[in-house]
Length: 167
Image (tube, rainbow, N blue to C red; front, side, top):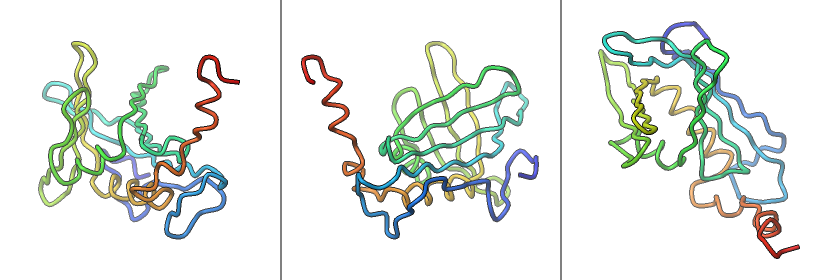
């Protein structure tokens, strides 16, 4: 990572950590989980200033419909958000989201950006990430689990076993 507010190197810090990568992303529950992580720096808008914040994007085939975004603003506290993978994908094309998370694309001086707005109670913050980084992250998440095949990765047996009265 270059340390710039937007890391747009050819390899934007994304990695597939699982063993047993599947060509074509065919869904199978008997395959090792495939976590995908991407570390980058986003711009956090605070009043008139932008602050660089180290951010980890994470996707795991054990939670096939979700992505996780963890912000580390250089303190002991890391703020993590979970939202739908489809929301991130849709937000690359147009404004997406109606509630606590909204995502939309932009281009400034020839650089593609992805804005993300997060709201919790009365608090709200907005960050901008490199579209190159987001695109690479989404691409690798789809390689791990293809769109439409997420259901094959849900551990329903484990879920049903946790329901009251089920053993």
